[in-house]
Length: 373
Image 1 (cartoon, helix red, strand yellow):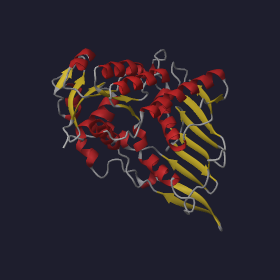
Image 2: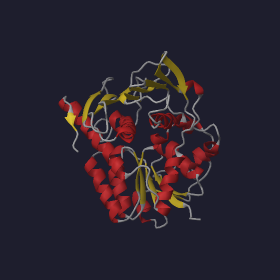
Image 3: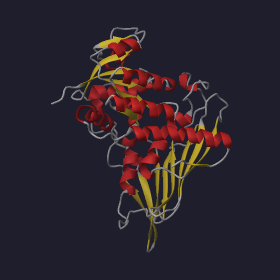
Image 4: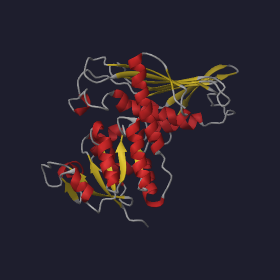
C-alpha cells in the first residue's frame, strides 16, 4: 500500500478550510496534512486546529519555506486568483505536484505554460473543478447518457441552461471585490464551473456570445450570460445553445439550476448541491463519511416532462447519487501514486480559462466570436 501523500495547503480562507483541508483530513489513507502556509498564526496549531481540532505537522510562514521543504510532495494552491499562476509555477519548479483552485490562472497562456512545466518534470498538475462531483450534475449526466430508446430520454438536446444565481446587495468585503485585481469577478469565479460543466457535456462550441455586467455598480462583474453555440453537423442533428447564467440580484426562494430542452422532453432542476453548505458548518470531517453527506433532499430533485401518445407526462428524475468531492481527491491521489488518468485534465482546465477570456472579449466588443478550432 502506498504511503499517504504529504500535502501542504496554501491559503486558509473559505477555499482552504471548506473545500480542501476537510478532504485531506478525511482521506488519511491517501493524504497527510503535513503542512500549511499561515504567515501569522494567532494560536498554537493555527486556523486548522481552531476549525478542526487537529494540527498540521508544520506551519510554514512563507512560500520559500514551503518550496524548500523536501518532505512536501503535493501543494494545494487556494489563494487569491491573481496569485494562482505564480504560486503554481514556483511549486512546480520546486519539483512538487500541484492542485490549483479555480480559476487555475488569469490567462490561457499562463495555464499552457504551467502545463509545459509540469510535463517536463513529470509532475501532476490538477485543476480544482469539484463541481463535476455535484449531485445534480451527476443526475443530469445520467439522464443525458440514456439511450435514445429510453422512455425518459430527452432526445436530441436543443437548448441547455445552467444557472448559479443568488441574491445579495452587499459586498463580500474581501479580495474578491477588488476590481483592479486580475482574475476577479463572477465569470472567473462561478463562470469557471458553468463553463467546465458545459464543455464536459457538449465539447468545444463553434461560437461564443457573452454579456457581462456590474449590476450593483461595484468594481467587479456580478452578472453574466454566456451563450455557447453548437452548429448542426454530422454528429449533431440539431443546433444547440448552451446558456450559462449567474445573477447577483435574483429574487427566488429556490434558485433555478438546470433547464434542458430536447426533441422528446424537458428537464428542469432547481436548487444547488448541498455540499458547500455542509462543509461550511460541519463540526468534524468525520461527517463527510456519513450517509447524509452530499445527499440531496427529494424536494430539490429535478423533473422530466416527456412527450407521450396521450400528451405530456411529468415525472421526477431523482438525484440518487450523492455529491462527493472525495471523488476528485481520490483521483488526484491515484494520478500521483499510480499514474491514474486525471478526471480533470490540464487541457480541460486550460480550455475553461480560454473561454473565460473569449467571454470577456465578446462582452467588451459586443459581438459573437467564432471559436478557434
